[in-house]
Image (cartoon, rainbow, N blue to C red; front, side):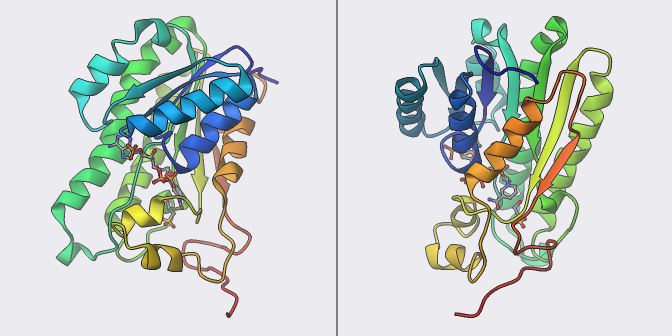
Length: 258
Ligand code: NDP
Ligand code: 8X3
């Protein structure tokens, strides 16, 4: 078993959903957490809660993962933190719209690719050298069932999650022999702010995604992340796909009639 107590973890996208649940779950294990996102007020509130409830340290870093200058200055500038990090959870991400390519909005595509793929890479590039140097660390990337199965209107989002899977697989080759572990946690339908973001604030449409079925809770995904992180050092969980019982694939969801 790998102990998380007293270690330091960085969780991107901790202002909501999975990232917030992962930060709380890590803190509950006695792990110190650095939490990131663009919404500073939420980071501050979560940091306070974590410190008060779990007596661990917490650092908030507010930056946009899409902006390499911000990542370099704010995360790269946190040298003391970088020298201690044992865990990186690359979770920040989003889907925008469900449009076919022929009518898709290129700004949506840019934002998904820049956040889910390039942002993940920028953060990893900043954190990983220290882990490799210390010959210890664990990178958990949040992929998706959308990294295995493509659905209509989701081509670009799914492409970003296929990319996350490819990056996790490639990274495992790159760090082979260094002791650094890489896991891809791949959830199915989960109720967070994800659908509200995807449908740009349309709560009714967002809610209908989960009509008649029981989605995953953020805590279910956080437990999977903690499980990967706490395996013994010689065990690398390459991937965990975690779906609701009401979901068999990206295409098959059981919905109870109202
Ligand atoms: P939420 O919308 O609840 O959370 C997304 C998080 O990402 C927020 O904390 C947000 O912070 C952060 N984020 C988004 N864009 C940026 C950015 N440019 N810079 C920094 N942070 C950013 O969604 P989830 O918790 O559901 O999503 C987390 C991850 O899980 C994503 O990668 C998503 O693709 C993936 N996923 C989600 C599933 C689901 O059904 N919910 C299923 C499978 C995977 P802020 O806005 O403050 O910047
Ligand atoms: C999010 C799950 O099915 O909406 O990655 O693509 S899905």
